[in-house]
Image 1 (cartoon, helix red, strand yellow):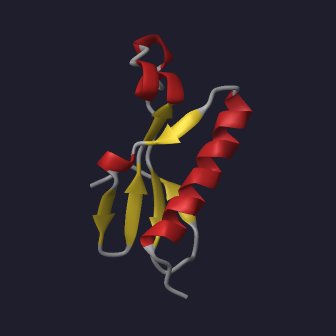
Image 2: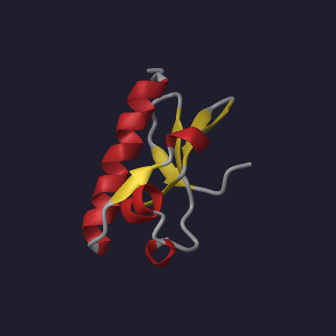
Length: 81
């Protein structure tokens, strides 16, 4: 089953929501920085406070983007090419 961008975005948003709940910080996808490759999309994310308020003290460090596979097989955290 092949998925489209909006389905992949939904998968990434659900994972970001889960991760944010685990660490007690609201996280958001940075849509302007999403990268598409042949078999997947890479969805970068960071804290809502960094993105919306430019609060550098709220920035995440070392977080890998969420790679969502176009074949619908799932996702992994992996460095973008």
